[in-house]
Length: 310
Image (cartoon, rainbow, N blue to C red; front, side, top):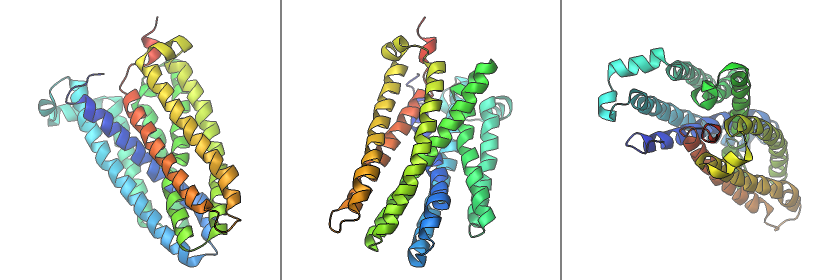
């Protein structure tokens, strides 16, 4: 990795973009699949949460759009090999956008972002909600074509793209869903809606189990392609970062298990503090998830471990 004037901002921009994309998609999934069925009997609380969820979606999409534009500029400078101030010209940007896979993917992703924004504008219609949800997850999955999976050739390349897209979708569903979960838990605590909070966590836990299963399966495939061996995992910087990512993932999984098995049952006992601890643990999960996105932002700029070990 080139730790130049382009290198560090590129890693940071990738991390922000991945996080914003996941939060946008995860928030829309949480609202549609988890929150709406639970909140249906609670009209007042439902209205408050819908407003909050709408703001999260718009904010996440705006950050994704801005960071995506910055990413394109920084990637253009990196590809051209020119200093940043010399690379940001119409000729260089036109070449990257029109003649590279990265540029073509970013055009498609810009179209998907516009589709998500349009669906959010007509969010009260059920069809707009579902179309927006599908577009947001396509927006997330398309990131697979901007990284190592997009550069892998042959049959392995197709497998890698499918696995990476599944990994991104599952990460969005779980990590991105933590923001609306925290908002709903806080609102439920203020309104003393204990049963609603318990039902919400149970439904999100089911979604989490599906997401974790998909993350583990797709992660194993990605690791086999990009790392290749236990030795490469141990002796390379890429492997070390991947191990750190796995450690953070394990802590998140432990917190989610504590929430479901220990804290949700405490909600049945008034004064046990279960709801407060649920919100606190979910907030810690979110912080760990953001740290994982930071690692992902860096991993995508490093040479895979399998290419560094003969």
